[in-house]
Length: 233
Picture 1: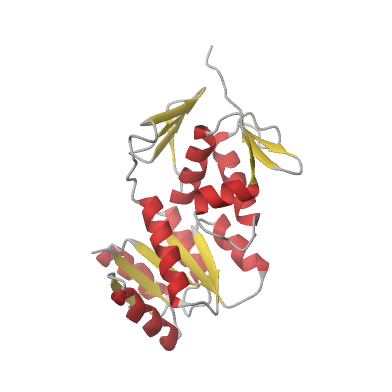
Picture 2: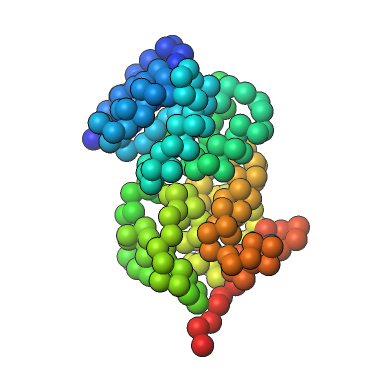
């Protein structure tokens, strides 16, 4: 049974999530502040975190930053009651896999959790994808969820990995932001394609020698992006 850590200081919301997740077959553990969440991460090893941004003691942004800095790739879905764009984009920039704005329906939360967990399982259908994808010095091992550049292993969040793999599976094709959103995030994100731009920016920081003149992920003005094949001579 997969275990979900719910980090939410508002008890009614926390209890609502616990109840609906248990009905859907998940085991739940919960914390009401950021410090407690960090401690539970060490002892309970959950499969996914539903993490509120506004928390006592340690806010959700700081919790996410600490986990990523410690090398944790656990999927994180952030919750925010604010309409502030900065919170959402900043959450993605520091390693969250998804975000939701309050109020939300438990049904939608569960759908998002299922989608994120499905992507993070590293369960690859060998009949549909190759075990290894590569372009020049860049190699992606799908089943191991590992990326190497010039022989050096790089750290990726689950969502960054999924996006890079999709680019490599569609090399030299122009892909719109909407196509990337649908293929990688697997659901309607209300047309908010900024999430794609944020993750492309992260990929470039990790795989490009010069982010201002990328050799792999090229911007196609007015449309989206294209991953250009790099030949090894």
